[in-house]
Image (cartoon, rainbow, N blue to C red; front, side, top):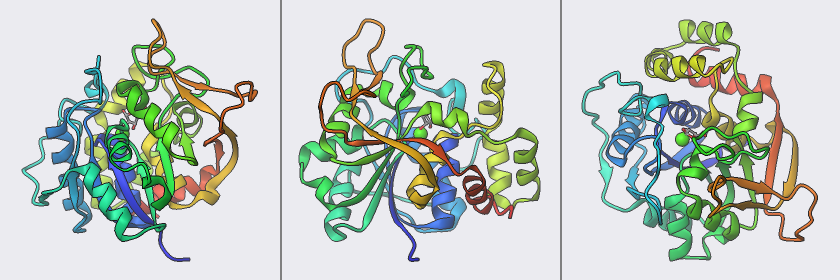
Length: 310
Ligand code: BDR
Ligand code: CA
């Protein structure tokens, strides 16, 4: 089987970092288009470059939008990922360059160069992808697959607004544009992430036996680990890694349901919530393939390989 060709839209981010390591271990990565989200764009772009250095690849890094499309965000996720987005380790200035092309334009160009070949993996607020879609609404026709990490399909969420998940809640208008504009996409939501955590002792063993990528990850994820512990979350949670597993090999999906998923854009309590029409009452196009269960051993094997811990 030939390797999947990935374009990754990302806001690194600790779980983005693990996903990017997975991508480089299992697929061809044509570019990292970078958004603001977990922390500000200057940090996320720098972190993407740090990750490219770590992989030893020459993956281009494209800087994207510094803010959501419409409203400024109410919160970032520095309390999870560290003020610099990579656990405040204090890495030196990376060597990998920033390409001189906006992320949204790079998404359009790369899909024109390889129509029907690329899987877009969206691990960040959907700002860059929405902008690309507004610039060229034919974009979905050239994308082989779109996998989105976003949403909270049973309304638990992980933000200050109770039912919202971070990526969708940070830029709800962008999520609305993408969910409306792509005829077909896989949705890996926050609650799936909670059902597919790693056992802590097992994960520590992978870090201990892995290579320099494991050592790197062990350093960057301390803040996130502590935050999750304080919030009473059990196991090691890596939302973007789960979406990356689906992007690398869709056969890891054991159960999914095709549904219409809307994004609440107003709502006194619910802005940024993903509203799933489970009963098909609205009779609207069911564009989202909502992933409900994954093959956990195969997911873990993908992560172990990415850490050099097989
Ligand atoms: C998503 O939000 C970010 O904090 C993570 O990197 C992930 O993409 C999880 O809700
Ligand atoms: Ca992310």
